[in-house]
Image (cartoon, rainbow, N blue to C red; front, top):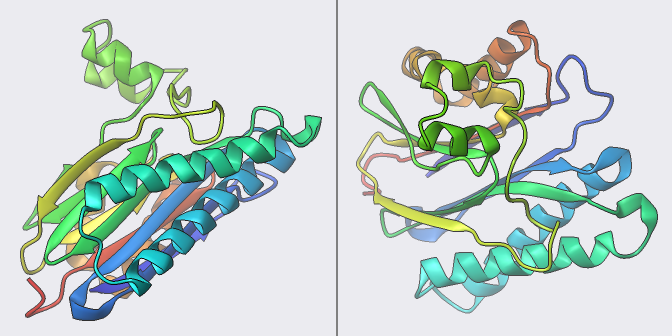
Length: 246
């Protein structure tokens, strides 16, 4: 697979508390993770960094021993380990109290994308001329939407849109959601923080991906979010299939 990513502080934040990592693997496989930290000036940045680093170590260790035999169990256990790492840090001093992070993690293996997530960082699949949201936000607005209390149009502009209901590290344990999908040639996975998805529509994402060279897409998407106000940190990670891989 081919990989391309970019992160930006945005227009209003004093610090970038997003973190992302990714790597290509043999046989056309790959992994990626995007984290969006929360919990104040000290806690948020550290939480995202700790979580993404823990994910990277887990992948490196598992793959050094061979292929991941049970991706769902492995990814959910890795989220649990990420949660423990961040939560233990949050207990080490008052400056870290309440720290946490979202996480969206992908492992592509044998032509199948395995994804786990906590919070409102998202994974999308671009197939043909469609953007398909693979993850469902763990947020107050998502709950209101599913209960019928607000419309999709109201959800887009809701004042509590950034209030999430799950995060890595805030509590002793956390439940991650898992999904998987087979990939076809030409498919592109997009992992992002809400600094992108809150400001750039799926239609705009699809247009940029379709009309832009793969490795220039993250920069174009970040620039679009900045022009829309850039109220938050913005992170974009693309994972694209190449001919003969699937």
